[in-house]
Image (cartoon, rainbow, N blue to C red):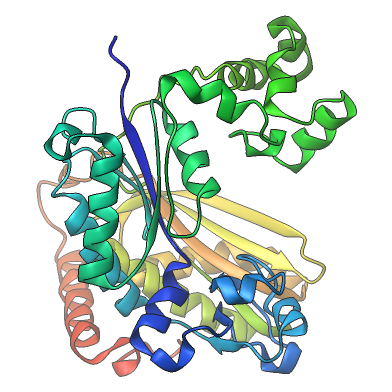
Length: 387
């Protein structure tokens, strides 16, 4: 088989970069996108931050209160989802000029298979350079791109050359690049695996590659074989262009831990409405409902059920979510975070009943009318009384 040429593109500090692009006063300053820090007493986490903020030790998913303590003079912003989506759409529109084989990973990250198209710009690096140039000129943002014959090496390469970098790892240079890297750079090595591997005196990917396959299998099972293959640059996974949505979810972190039933159920209704609206936007209905509950002390639980039939109705999602949440409400648990997720969209194009239920049809029309109002006037324009 001829080797593939895969590029991994990752926008640099995307949300923060968009804000700095649109407001010149923010350029060169530490910018943090996430929850309101409220003087260090805020809840929630950092979504992303500028490179200026990272110099203070701030990183994504860090508690916002900790970020405030590290850099109280940073500019803290709640973010603008619509603006970021628009910038993302502009970036992906540029990527589509270079190849149809695109696997979106998130709003600001994707894999591209440029095996059959890089010749238009002579070399893989030439293609990546042109992509970066077009994004900078047309969208006003920078991106980092890694190129390799396999996905996981391309991903590591883009991380390695941030920010605003371009790094190509050819087939001949893979092990020179890969083996000196820390073991945690390998896909599938999390904090727990790292501790175990370090205890075995394995600190680099090269150290792992020296271990016999049988020893890794004995220690980690099938996952050990996966790690063995990656350490030897064996990764058959290609760029998956199927962008099927697996689930739709929303979460909310309370300002203070609460056991107040009215506040909890009101928030649950709000989340159900958000999920319901997104499901209809994607023309999806799901059967599996899951709620996520994080209590005081960060202990997290999930509860799930399978609905009798697929739905995207807010009322149905809300009522079943309240049922799942019942044990936590009845025991007056102090809740820090709740989330609602709908999944299991199989056969979404199959009509569930030959004779459409009139009540369901009426509910569908009501939901669509609410969507139209919110799309035109914003989320806060109209909502249910208990939300």
